[in-house]
Image 1 (cartoon, rainbow, N blue to C red):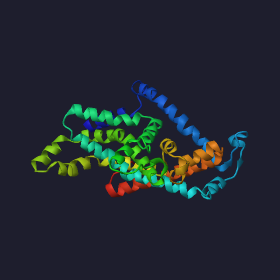
Image 2: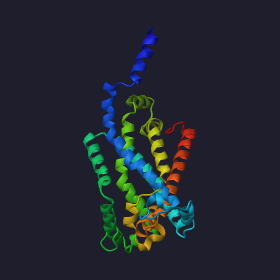
Image 3: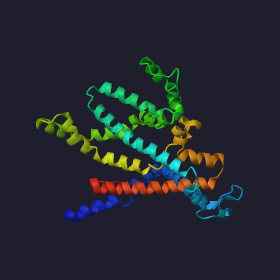
Image 4: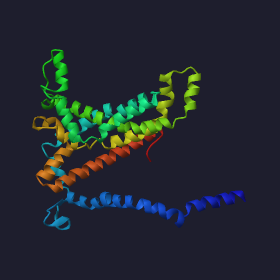
Length: 311
């Protein structure tokens, strides 16, 4: 009898209850509408990747050319350059940028004074809210040949001024470092939230067993962060074929096109400047397909290696 009653109560919770559920659905309605408008309606426009799109004719009346736009992109003389630059910057950002918020969160978690911890957190969050336009101007100011802070410090050691923003070998380090500086504080929030959910009794038990802070970090803290690290890693691996437009576009100049021209700046140039909309759509569709494959592959690899995955 008790089992039957328990099963009935569970079914009542699952069943739709207008008084209970409708207010929640109304709260979700604006978000659902925004997602439909900005995420699902634009999918219709993706068909111009298979057409010789003309704004005067519109999407439906433009001629079908099937995969000609994709072939045009693959045969473009700049194809391998933009692919290589995109992957190079993303891989270096993954190697150096992905561990940065984890290390920062672990260090911040060791701070015992709450006021100092709050001050450090607030300061670390601020760069995230600064526009890339401002960040680019800061980078140019710091790396200026004569008046830049870096070159002033180098001159104290008798080193000649370095033209950071006109030499190819410095572009990728500048982009990666500026990205780490801007995003580390905000990204650390996910790891700090996961750290707060770890049971403090585990640390007490480990301490009684004679383990120091390092062993506690290895055996308790990092396993406690495993799930969120997996999620963030899968998402970042899934976007390795994409790259932000603002930071690259604002930091590049004609002298650095060889190492700074990436997929996003290339599509901007041929799409908005040269008005080749169909080719731009084909590149974007290819990029999305590659990212989808990478997300699925990274998720499956995570499931096999760690036993945990996004789905």
